[in-house]
Length: 322
Image 1 (cartoon, rainbow, N blue to C red):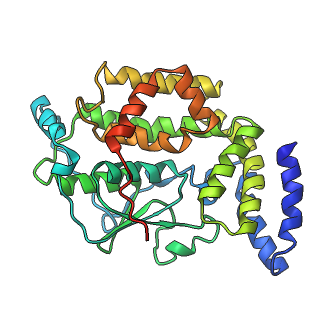
Image 2: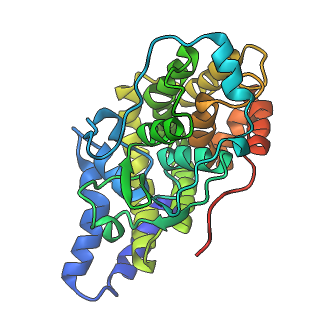
C-alpha cells in the first residue's frame, strides 16, 4: 500500500514538470523497460545500476586491456604477491575519474580496488535517466574509469588492467582467485537483486537508498523511487525464475556460506592479505550491507567476521572530494 500511495503522489508531482513531453520522457524512462517480459535488465540498470550487462558484452581492445595469463602460478609467487602492503605497490596516475551509480555493485567493485590500493579518484555521479554525464563516451554503461584521459570499461577488466600496471612483471594469476572472481560476476550479483526487491517494503527501502545517493532531480527522485520500487518488486519475481532461485534468502545465505567455506579458515581468500576475489566480493556486498537483506545475511551466516576484516583492510575511501 505504501508503494501504491507513493505512485499516486508522484503522479501529482509530475504534473509540475515543464511540459507534457518532459513528463512523458521521465515516466517513459522509468517505466517502459520494466514492463518488458523478455529483457527487464536494461531499464533496471538505467534507473539504479543494480544490473550490469557489461560482463556479457565483448569489450573492444581499443577501449581497455585484458590481462594475459601464462597458466597456473606457483604458490610461492602468490604468497609473495600478497605479502606486499597496498601502499608498497604504487600506481601514480595524475587524474582518475570514476563515472558511476553510487548503488551499483560493479562500480563498488572498482571503488573497493581503488580504496584498498589508495589510488586517489574523483567521482562523477551519472544521472541514470539522461546519462548526460557520459554523453562524451560511446559506451553507455557504468562503471567507466578515466585514467589520465584513457577510458576503461567493465569492472573486471578495469581491475585487471590496473593490477597489471601495478605488477607488470607478474602476468600469472592464481586459479583459485580467478575462479572466485568469476563466481562474483556470474552468480553472486544475480542472487542480490531478488533479495533487495524481495518484498514491496524491501524494494522501497532499496530505491530510497538508490535515489537518495544518486544523481536525480526532485521529480526524477519521486518517479524513480516509487515506480522503480513497484516495478522491480515485480521484475524480481522474473529474475528468480531466470536464475532458478526458489528461496531468495536461502540463496543469499548459501552464497555467503559458500564464500566463507572458500576461505578455508584463512583470514582472506588471498591468505594474509586480500586478493582480487576478496575485493570483488566485498565490493558487490558493500552497497547492500545496511539494507535489510544485508543485515539478515550477516545475522544468519558466518560472513560477518570476514566482512569486518575487509572493512578494516580496505580502510578509508581514497575518493577526492571536489
